[in-house]
Amino acid sequence: MSRKLLSLSAMATLMGGTALADVPSVAVDIAPIHSLVARVMGDVGTPDLIVQQGASPHQYSLRPSEAAALQEANLVFWMGADLSPWLEDAIATLSDDAVVTTLLEADATVLIESREGALFERHGHGDDDHEEHDEHADEHDHEVHDHEEHADEHADEHDHEEHDHEEHEHGAHDPHAWLSIENADAWLNLIAAQLSAADPDNAGSYFANAAAARAEMERLAAEINATLDPARGGSFIVFHDAYQYFEVDFDFPASGSISLSDASDPSPARIADIQGRIQAEGVDCVLAEPQFNPGIVEVVLDGTDANTGVIDPLGSELAPGPDLYPQLMRNMATTLLDCL
Image (cartoon, rainbow, N blue to C red):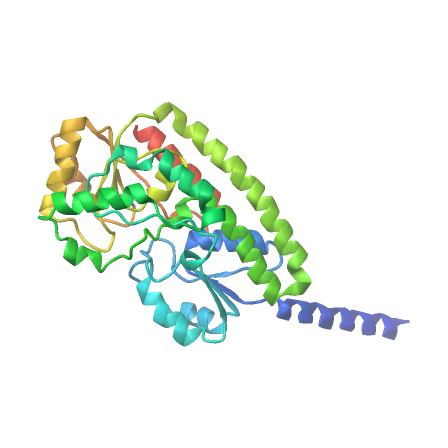
């Protein structure tokens, strides 16, 4: 009898080891996307995070452990070269056998065009943009036409800014698409499908987790709208132009951004434009970001009565994992409410 028990125990151990080995190795670029993947994987496995907390995804140097994670990955989820141009070659070289999902190129992703000027038109984030979101599933339009018009107008009005220098730093579309809950919701099913194709034995778990997470996203959107309601009508300036998707999702437009990109310092002309808007419109709030020089925000605030706060589109101070994404979005809404 004891020999039979030992044999059964050994067999169970081997079977358990086999099941564990079949779970795909997954590498993810940034913490918000890592959070969505971790939520879908649930108890089945844990994805590896490539860009560590507190670092900018636009410019980063891989650590050996992160390069190893890419090399061992069966699946890679990343935003795309518009966000992390340095990562494109790394994935091609290190993850050549992996199934790579580029979320900015996914059919389900709603994209918004990049803005160029320092100052934003408030009506550029209204009903037309929401119609764009509503119609995307049928039309796959990927264009927000109001932004195209305003980008052209601002390009003419602000020739003194160094647009030619800045244009190479980003693509035609704003790459911060994870700040739309609508996009996050769509990606959950895409993530589940890719995981299930690689690991059919756990497909039921992946899709069940995705379905539960999508229900959570619906509640999260309602919660954020309720949080923002008391501050609607307030005006705010962001540090760099990363928040369009949040603005459109919640009809909560920014007035401008100090910097076009977190990869470059703003020109004196751009800072002057922002200061002029703060003075002319009585802007209520100017937001810094944890990764970047607070001295620039202090320069912009000099001589104004605007409040300031720190907003974080990456959740740099949050623990990586399935809870990071919803907490990141809540924190952004709370920061806006407190500042306004």
